[in-house]
Length: 297
Image (cartoon, rainbow, N blue to C red):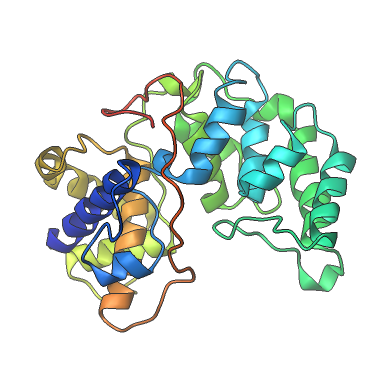
């Protein structure tokens, strides 16, 4: 396995985060790619929007059986100012959400974060906010009794149960699980550390690590998973050396996506969608520690 570049990207991105959070002056890196372009943190729970969601919705409502639905709303919107205006969305009030979204749009204010944007089908003639409220979130809410996490669920089982709904592909289901696994009952899921599902960019990232053509197909998800698990084992000591301990599967899967993004820039294959815009260092919020080694925030 060619892990040098992956470990470099993981180590440098984590170093940038630590310098940022320590309120050190810019530049936080000598790497022009990291300096110029936006990359997610090594651990997703260190990302700015995720911190807001955890502090304002997830942790204060950790015992709500429908906090999973709030995470669905949070990730389809993914923009803290909008979520603040909407307020915690359980019980579901679709008219209020539509009113908030329409008002922000009318005022020329940003309504959505760019990371997970799921747009309406252009043929429907409806704005995205209406499509999401009516066709995506409404059916999830109506099926809430069936979709609530159970004490005996694994993350893999819950991933399957969330399927079959509008716009709930593997990516969005993975994002919701990456949130709700930090509270009970999924916090005790036996596959908490190991669960991960491949996506287009993480498949490309793992191809690069394996020295395969970046777009080489995988025979199956199981085949990808076998090599992914081998990678986790191979770099375990290196992650300890970097002060990251053991990364859960979803975090490493995300790192593979970011590796592919970095390599596209470095090799002149393309550019990411977003440039980096620095913000003030976030304050460390209160909350329980994560299941994995290290701090949640």
